[in-house]
Each structure stands twice: as C-alpha cells, then as structure tokens.
Length: 225
Length: 225
Image (tube, rainbow over all chains, first blue to last red; front, side):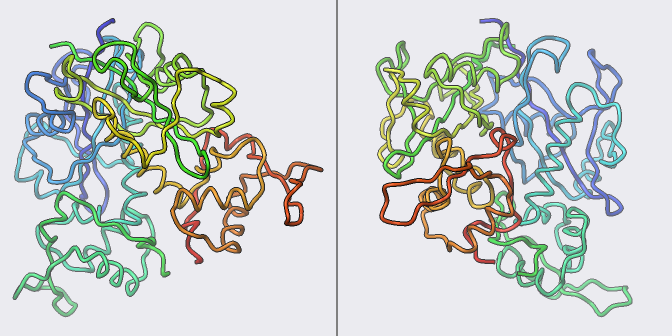
C-alpha cells in the first residue's frame, strides 16, 4: 500500500459589507509558498479524534478561531491535486460573524470576497465552489445563515443576511412566520437597536441548542407557501 | 506523519419485495473475518484516479456490479473504527434495480433488509444509517428513486417506489405533475405492461442524461403544493 497524504481543509465564510468572504492564509512552505490558500493541514493521527477534530485544530492553530458551527463538506482526492503525491482532503466549512475573526486578530488571515477569488492553489477553488453551493442550497431551508450573525441581531438584519446568501428578496411576512416555526431565536430582554431612522427593533440571539445544530424547514424560507 | 489507513466503503441499496435492502459481503480476512460487511477496500494510489474511482473499482471487484449512479456520502474517520489503526473511509452510496444484482449473480453478495440489519462490523451501521437518511431526504425533492427501477417501468410503479422510500402515500396528480416537470422520462414506444386487472399502462425509461445525474424539484415530490 503506497502512502497517501491525508489532510483537512476548511472553508471559513463570513459576511463583510453584505458580501460573502472566505478566509485565506498565505502559505509558509512549498508547494505554493506565498500563495493565499484555504487553512488546512495534515491529519495528526496521534492527536486528532477524527477529521472534524483535525479541522477544528487546524482552524484554531492557523486562524485563532473556534467556529461553533463546522460541517463536513466533501472529500477531494486523487494523484493530481497536490504535487507531493496522491492526496485526500476532507473538506469542512464554517460560518462565523466577522466580529469573531476581528477578535481573533490573526495577522495572517486575509478575507477575500468570494466573487473576487483568483489563483487559488491545489483544487481549493473547487472546494470553495462546493462550499458556496452547499451554503446557498442549505440556507433556503434551514437556520444556517444565523451563524453569520453576531451575538445579537434584529429580524430585519437576519432577513438581509438570508437575502444576501440566496441572492433574492424575501417576503417579510412569510420569512418571519418560518423563522418563528424554526423556534431557534430568543428575545434579548430590554435591548433594542437604536440610532436608526426606523423605530427600535427587538434584538434576538440564537438559542443555545442551535449553535451547533441546524433547524430545518419543510418548505423554502424564500417561498411564500 | 504516522500512516493512516485509507479505504472506501459502498452502501449499495436496492428494492426487494417493496423493501430497501443493502448488499453485504462476508469478510475474507481479519478483522471481522466471516462477518457480513459493506463492500469496501483500500484505496490503490497507483491505480485509482480518485475516491469515486476507488469505490467503483471496489464495487466491481467485490460484487460484479457497475452502478450508473454512485454518490459520495461522507467520510468516516478516527482511531477507533478499525482495529488496525487510525483510518479514513470515504463512503459512497449507490442505488440499483435488483435485476442488476441478479444479473451479476455474485455468489458472495447477501441482500439484507435495512430494518433487519444487525451486528455490522466497524462503523458500518453508522454509514448505512447515514446513507438511508440521505436517500430518504434526497428522494423527496429529486429523481434519485428512479435508479431503483428496472430499465422500463410504469408511472404507478415509480410512484410506489417513491412511497416505499418516503414511507408515506403520495397524491397521484401532483406526483405526476412533478415527474413531468423533472422531464427525466421518455415513453417507450409500443410497449405496455400486460396481464394486470387494470388497463395497460405506458412504459417509460430514464433519459440517458439522468442515469448519472439527478434532477431536482423546488418543492417536495410528496407535497401537493
């Protein structure tokens, strides 16, 4: 049995100026030294409990970020994706509020808008594209986009995030009914957003259970059915 | 870097007596020699183009079957799932008509009803459960169950297969409208099913493009919307 290179890669997504961005890091070593790439690394059999654990460790070591929500995306493999040899990358994706990246303040992390990506090494472009497709698809029937919100947020802010990801306007009444049905939010007592032209809006936060788990709807959040 | 065992496993599903069955093989070697397990094996870096190719090869070698539809399910990994050491299994699932398994006539293949599985080795139970969840979920909005049909089939037969997988009755009118919208079927000229009490029904087959690709609906095939 020839040796196979076993790695993990993480597509860490966040919203900046109402656009999806992906976190990239300049590579220290060959191959592709100096090129911006997804945070990734070897699986460490002696310390990682599984590939999710390897992805969490890699993300923490390389970006300083512990993402509450991290999901396996897919596995990419073959002889051609890494010049060092036949390799497997178990890819994960994570969604975090940009404030979490700011707080980690890791000097190496670059946030690049997903529609301005170019020159990614390995098959990282393919991995990012798969992550974007998954996020857009899953956002239409789940609580996934909530992970892009900060600790507290208003319903109009949440709707705006869904609309950004789905790339279309959503009917406010049916959106609120579906968010209500998901039962994922709790009102934050006594707190209101202020300083806007509109009347103050109730602030919400994600219920604890849903920080690591998604809630799913039967029908699309962007349909009026 | 310690060596990691790299394998693929395939959950091959078929319908027998209107029940989902999974194809298992008695293991030749330790660990778990003589125990029924998913068809699987090592990735061969010197010959496999990627993990899908490894899964296709493994399935062909171990069961004699070339499944037109084969999709990556998820990757299972860790130090505890295989007694030989830290291992990765990239799991795939396939759906085939039982006639394909009959034609392969592989003496080692056992078809076990998914609700009667017991004593599977490794984490194969977890892999099968993940495949069943994926198939049930995906069947509600795609052409996936068509791969369980034979070469030709009637619409009542196809509806029955969807109902078996989804575990619920489906409204005939809305089912037919959605199958029509999917545009995946072509009528087989001059052929009708005979010998039944009902009037003869038109036979259909899957359009060539959809033998390896799914068609998706916006709304559930089991909803009347």
